[in-house]
Image (cartoon, rainbow, N blue to C red; front, side, top):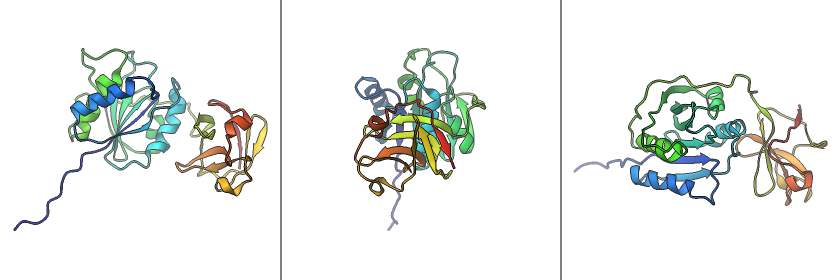
Length: 248
């Protein structure tokens, strides 16, 4: 009589892109992954990263992937230079695998975590010059999800030393009208000033009167501007890229 055996659970592939969900691009990536990594779960974590803004996306990528399990393969794509001189890469950091362009998107992953290896991916001659997500990143992610190592030489990640540790601006406005900032909530703040209006912190939405704007530590460790049962973006006229002032 044999004892219980452990089934191998396929790794998860998570997608974070600026593709949106109304065009065919996400579906094409899914189709490639379904062909090359059948049985592996693919999670659409975020397809509204700031379009064309590699820097703002980088400050979102680090906190919004930190809760994914070790072994997760992450395809991250905000890639205005696709098909140009920037490299296509795979890096392993803190037990997770990241696949995407070497254009600064992984700067905060490198700065706040520990990279154990980084590889430049081969770009096949058959790959579309304008769609590496489907033709380069998806096949590499499928290999990683299956336990294989994508081919390619060791690579030194391009760095953005001039970027600050925290970005004092709005990175993204969600459909509630909440504005996610590039400031980590591990730094206590007593006041945020945005568009000339001073905001004070609250623990959660219901701690403030309905409609009143405030800021709070969101579930991914960033300071976020919100209003109880209302759109803070509408009330304050906020949009991605707006600068803010932070006071301890």
